[in-house]
Image (cartoon, rainbow, N blue to C red; front, top):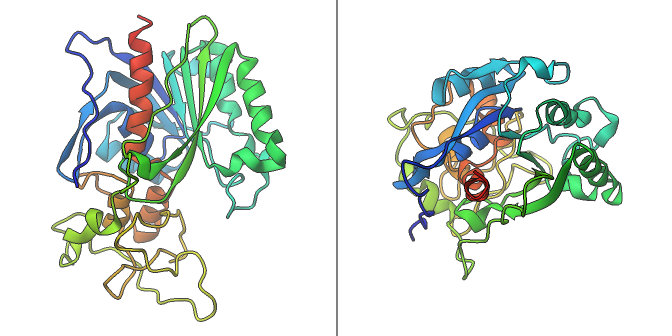
Length: 328
């Protein structure tokens, strides 16, 4: 199987669009928006986006981002910031924290400070009025309070002068070898006609890329000749039950979701008697091998599990780029 290459942007005259990134984490969504990386020997084309500044409140994520993407990242608590201190851009992106919306999380929703952090996007929208906003979260957000939580968020975005759509995308449909659903809230300023087209699956036959396709070549590698391949949790299976993370990931299908779990609950390799390595988890999230995670196993797994798969982010960004090309 071969990854289907996305259409290239038109030419060198293509206009570059400015981007501000909130809740950037280690940079999965940002890498998707810029493109220009290689995954499994397949080149992902560059996109016409220029990230002015990225912001996150986690110092370790900022270090990972800076070492792999760019110096344009800053440590900032977005729960309390002044939008006048943030540059004006055409596009605002942000994977606002999902823990209080996730089915395996505390499910506090908008009752928690963390659950209300989407309002950092609202503050920027009211002040700078970007053309497009892309918020990312877990599908569980859609069913909280029988849909009431998502309705409130949509209303808040619309009240800033935007039309809003919610895209729920299944990552394997876009070449990601991992069973992961993500929800993208896309807002377009009211003065712009039409709306970006929701990306369509690349697979008509549903023969998705598998775990073995993604990481099979790493089976005999136990050192750092491939970065982060020697890092993995040594923990054995739980003595009681078979909870999340104690499963053996299937070889002939996309993997289970890579979770941001710091308690050694990373799933087991389909063949080897160990849990998946940091690099294998990064591969299943479609991070390129030259994207190096510089921290402990625990921190690296948290950063990878919290990230948007860059390849999934790319197809969302490609739709946004195509739309903006019509609104010069």
